[in-house]
Length: 158
Image: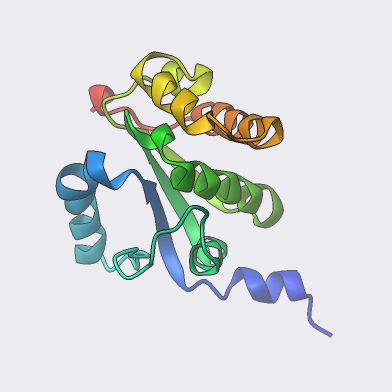
C-alpha cells in the first residue's frame, strides 16, 4: 500500500506559482522574471486565461496546490486586491498543509510595511478591508504578517 501523501508530493503540475498585483509588476519586473524562468525550463503557472472575480476561483486554488514553490511578489498595491489577499491565505495554507515553499519578494515596498500593514501598502489594505467581516480581515492580516516574516528578497539588497 502506498502512502497517499508521498505520491501527491511528486505530482507537481507547476514548478512556480507567482502571486502578484498585475498593475504594479506585470509589464516590468514580473515579465523579466517569467522570461528567466522560461529560459531555465522552470514551468510557471500563467494567469492570463483565468477569469477574475471577487474571490479566487477553483483554477487558482488547484494551481497553488499543484505547485512546488510560490513566489509572492509584494508591491505597493498588492494589498489593495482582495484577490491577492485570498490567494496569499491559500498559499500559506498550502505551506502549512503540504510543505509548499514560499519565497517573498518585496518590490518597491519595505517588508515591515507588509508585516505591519503601514504606509501606502497599509492604506490599500484598509480600503480592501472596508465592508469585509472581522474574520476575513484578521485572516488577511495574519497572512501578510506571516508571509512578510519569511526570509525573502528585497531588490535593494541586490
